[in-house]
Structure formats: C-alpha cells, structure tokens
Figure (cartoon, rainbow, N blue to C red):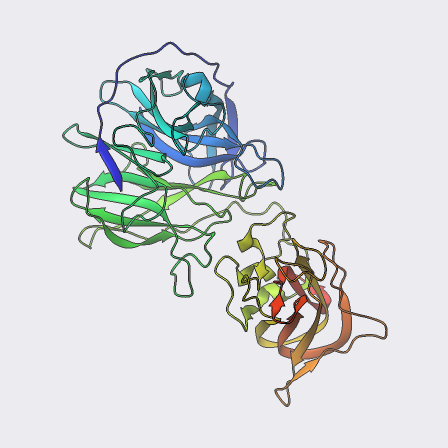
Length: 494
C-alpha cells in the first residue's frame, strides 16, 4: 500500500464553476437513482451536520459502450433515507477536473473523496489526468478546498498534482487513482491510494476508517479461481477487508463482506449513519434502467458488526434491491432453475453462470458470456450441462452465441461449426440426442434473436449441449455462449 502522511494545504487558487440545480429523488430502494436519468459510480460518503453526503462520479457511456466516459462529479444528500427508500437531494455536476485543476485534462473525473476538516473546510481529493504529463501514465491526484461541502472547490496546490508518477520524488510506476484519506484521533492525516502493493489489499480501490481503536481497510478484491470465495472470474470484484493496529499497517486479511454485484467493478465506502451508531456500506451496481458495467448506480445497505470478536469483525453485507414494478411474466424457459456446468474447465475470464442468467447483452464483457476460448489450447469440443433437482418435461431450446471472428476461423471466438442437445434418459441413464422435426437443424448463426429449436418432448433431470468449434488440425477457435434456454411445453410463473 502506498501511504503517506500529508498536510492539508490551505492555498486557495481562483477557480469557479456552476453547481447543477438540485433534483429531489424519491427512492424506493436500491439503486438510489434507478430510472437511468443519471448514472453514479464510485461512492464516497461523509457526514456533516448530521447529514449524509455521497460524492460520486457520473458515468456517461452510451448504451452498450464499453468505455469509462466520466466528465464530472455529483453529490447525493440525505438526512433520513434508508436502503428501503427515502428522499435524497441530488446535485449533478458539482465539479469537473479542468474547472478545478488548471493543470488537468478534461474528463476522467474518477473516484474522488471529500474530507471534512476540523477547521470547517472541505478537501476534495481527486484522481484526474494531468495535461502534458511528463510521466508514462498521466493519472495524478490533486487536492482542492471549499468552505461548503457542495463547493465550489478551488485548487489547493495550483502548481500541480500532489501525487503522480514523478511527485513526490522519487515517484512511482503505478496508475495513481482512488485516493482515500484518514484523519486520525491525534490530527495526523493519511492519504492512501491505489493500485496497492500490499499483500492484503492487492486490488483497488481502498477505503480506510477507524473504529474503536482498530483501523479498517476495505478494498475491491479479486482472487479469481475455482476455490475463490467471492470472485468466480478475473473480471469480477468483491469487497473484502483487513485490519491493523496502525494506520500504516501491516494489514491482516479478515474476510469478504460483499460478493460480486451486477457490475464487473466494485467500489465501496463505509460510514456511521448520521446521528446513530448504525453503519452503512455504499457501493455501485449496474442495476438501474439501461445500466451496465460503464453505466453504474450507487446503492447502499446496512453494515453490521460482531463486537464479540477481537478486533470487532464486519458481518457479511446482504445487498438489497427495490422490488420489481411488475411481477415476472410466465416463461417456458427453465434453464435458470438448473445447475450449470462445463465438462471442460472454463477459462478464468469467462463465467458459466452467464449462460442462464436471462440476460443477452449486446456488447458483453467476458464474464457476461461463457466461452471455451483458451488461445492455442482452445478445445475442439466443449459440453455444457444443465441439471435439475427433479424431473422436468422439455420440448425446445435456444442458444445465443457470441462471436468476434468470422465463420470457420481457428482463432478468437468464431461461430461454432455445429452443436446439438442431448438428454439423460430416465430409465437407462444414458445420453440420447433430442429428436428434431424433419428439416430442423441446430443453427449456428450469431444473433441475439436466435430462434427456438423445437424437438419431441422428453422428461429428464439433465441435458447437455455439445459444441464443436471451428478450425482444424489441432487449431480451433473458441465457442462463445451468451444464453442457453431450455423450454418446457407451457409457460409458468416462477
């Protein structure tokens, strides 16, 4: 963990910007802003005058665009909201990098934190990109100051960033983002940022706080693998924490507290709720209307403690979500009720659970589809399996493929050469192909509107799809599957 003790700088530069007009948000649960009118990510909470403030950055990527388009910071404010709902005041556009830091480039208003100081001022620590940077990576951290939590904020160090690959000497070789600040009981101020070189917090972003004499470090963790407690793929992140008796560590890993969410990234901040001893965990998801990995939205839930342990431990956080406005429609698809598996090991960036999550993203990242792609080791044949706890009747299937290469390619992920479905017979326990009507085939066309393949109804506890990859002579492309439906004869509500 890169950490340093820094002094709050009281140099005020002249800069100004217009704060967006406040918007009243009536939330009925998570995420706080759920209608897709604004997207908010990387929440950082603080309390002032018994009011909860949450600064976030605004995701502005277009629908299905896989890129961070983040130009401004914004603020959510409440004195009464709970995870199940309440009233917030939302302030869009409380600041932009170039408006605050003359040395910064426009855009990249990434995860920032505002720290109320004992002297009544507020300090904004923000990662931005430095214009005309002399460094290999232009990300740098600046600090700005205001007498109002909503700003306007002015650069407290107008000569340039306080952290970059060259500041302070001798510099570093990391991407300097995700600052978090701790003001200790003795008035010492500690600035932490990510990525981290600490063996406990091997990922970003960090969040540091102190409770009952113990220092707590929350961070977005990824130790993907078959035995991982919380990150099934290399694209996922969960929130874990460590503790220390010193703000400078060493840190002892404790446990994960928040599993993967609907976005591939995860970013948390924890704080005691205004006027009480209750704590909150704030984080972001992709669960707002038309949300996605680059259109995220702030959520929050109760964070509770087990004070019988030493040091006190954080209990797992149970994420909540607002109830659906309408009940789910009856469906013939019973794949979501099955256990999904792959007979071959799934490469670490892909996720077997994606094949029956009832989502068909137009431009998915790897954990949003399953694939057999393993470079030169991609297999010729792969088999996906569904198993149910009891016998089911089925008579149709639909498979939505992902491809980034043309038909017949032996590199990347082309459409499969062929595929078919088999079912496990109830009597003999053998695998048999389903019986298609004359002229019916299993299509290999890549389209999100794949047609259903009907077959003679069977009863079974398990089906499997055999996928044959494109290629030849030991070189094969991968096969990618966004969704595999298995349908029963009539629709029913689940």
